[in-house]
Image 1 (tube, rainbow, N blue to C red):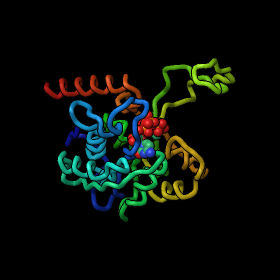
Image 2 (cartoon, helix red, strand yellow):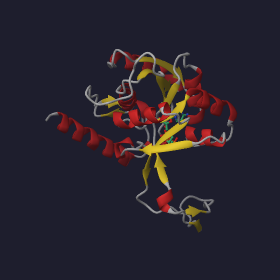
Image 3 (spheres, rainbow, N blue to C red):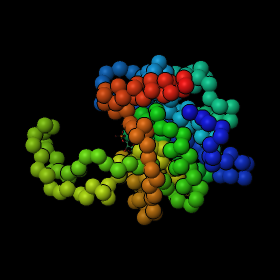
Image 4 (cartoon, protein in one colour):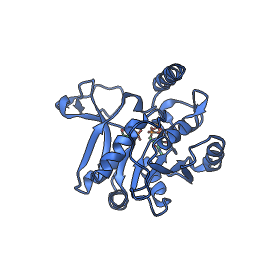
Length: 254
Ligand SMILES: Nc1ccn([C@@H]2O[C@H](COP(=O)(O)OP(=O)(O)OP(=O)(O)O)[C@@H](O)[C@H]2O)c(=O)n1
Ligand SMILES: C[C@](O)(CO)[C@H](O)COP(=O)(O)O
């Protein structure tokens, strides 16, 4: 995926250095029984390795912090040792927590000084293209404290009164205007100080890091996401991910 000719955020010493935190400590319950999701194979290689390579493909990223399943940190270190990364990219492995939010915080706590921009990227989005990563970094460098890659929705979305029992009919209470909605992906990019403050301040449950920055009253901006940055959540997503990889390998052959 790396292409030396494309214009990317420079890695010049004077430019803000970028680190990526990859929360990878989830079980993958929705994917079904098996190893922790990040360690499951995609095209014969653990999903986590694809995600790490996707971050390292950006020449701006000089450090990747992997937040591993708590009992799997040693295994993740061996995996990273066994799979080549670009020479410019260092990595660290730390054990994760009980929630995604806690895992990201543990990754942030492990970040050494010297990285002013931080990406947070789900291990469960192994196929994000490098152009999307670079677009997020560029927008942070341009001054946005928080940036999300996002796509318009294909489905109409309804707000419901959630049923007490799964599968029971749920009353619909509203239909938000679809043109104003976006499906948000990762990597989400942040000015480091802002992200650290968000994780120190916001205690309620959130589903993404940018939402915490919103709670600080700061502006989050969206840049175009990519269809291939989808999250591997359920078994069908794994089928799609294998198909995308197979298509890439075919195209790389030409
Ligand atoms: N305690 C947790 C929970 C999740 N994650 C990570 O957060 C990302 C997004 O979470 P999700 O896709 O929901 O993964 P899981 O929590 O593993 O999935 P599930 O909810 O189906 O168990 C994943 O890369 C996952 O490994 C994490 O680091 N620590
Ligand atoms: C961060 C995220 O990927 C943005 O869409 C998403 O909210 C993660 O949700 P999950 O339930 O932890 O997979």
